[in-house]
Image (cartoon, rainbow, N blue to C red; front, side, top):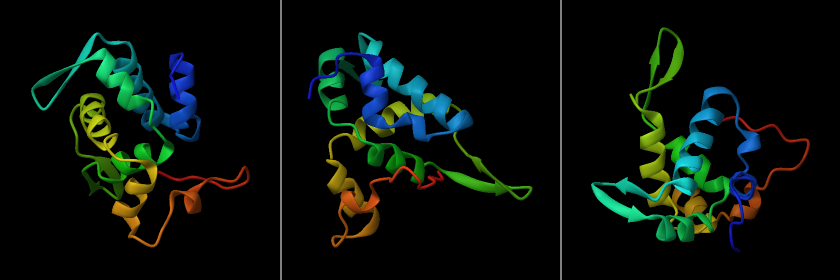
Length: 129
């Protein structure tokens, strides 16, 4: 379950499913989390070893959970993120979300009768975030 590289992390998080600025923001956040000596979450400094230990459990469900809960609003007929600095927001939200397993995330989002397996993407499925 050990993360050997940033590429391994991106694979586990399935960032290849993301598009445009969403992809760029999540990949930037993950790079910072993986490479930094420490990160700040809620004013607390978290050392690299602890961050990497949490990152070992990352899944696409964590990315979707954070993205689904990012504040948005409709502006001129377009949905816009209402976060001025999305990368630090993603770092904080993702670090906190990583306390939970993929199944726990799915249950929080969709209820107790649903499993993360239900949301596993097939090759011909399209994903929209």
